[in-house]
Length: 134
Image (tube, rainbow, N blue to C red; front, side):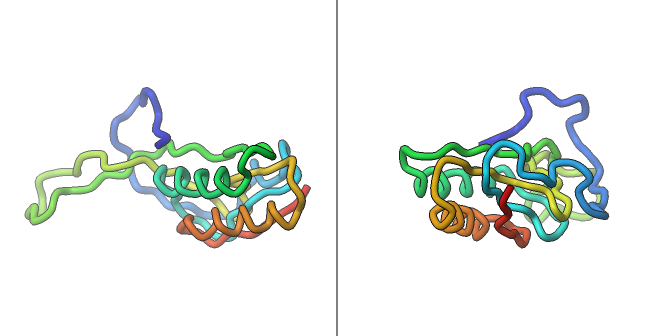
């Protein structure tokens, strides 16, 4: 799974994801992409599951790019911990994604296969997604 090698601050505040993507909204590397249709967080586990689904569908042909990186630490408190006692420990990392952001890109396969591979990947992600072309 993806996570940063080193972070300046171990824990981060939650924050809110507002607006639309001002960068990373165009398909740059491949011919086909998977674009987010709503704001949200995508965990490193979801990115890895989507990556595996795409790779299995591509087999040997085609190339894939991951355009997001999970760099936001998400904290959790243990079960049955009473209120108070501070912020919980870092549980996992997630990528904050705005509407319109391209998450994955594919090249080197026909459009029908790319559409199906990215649909399978989109099913594993917690935000609504859409197939986009260059």
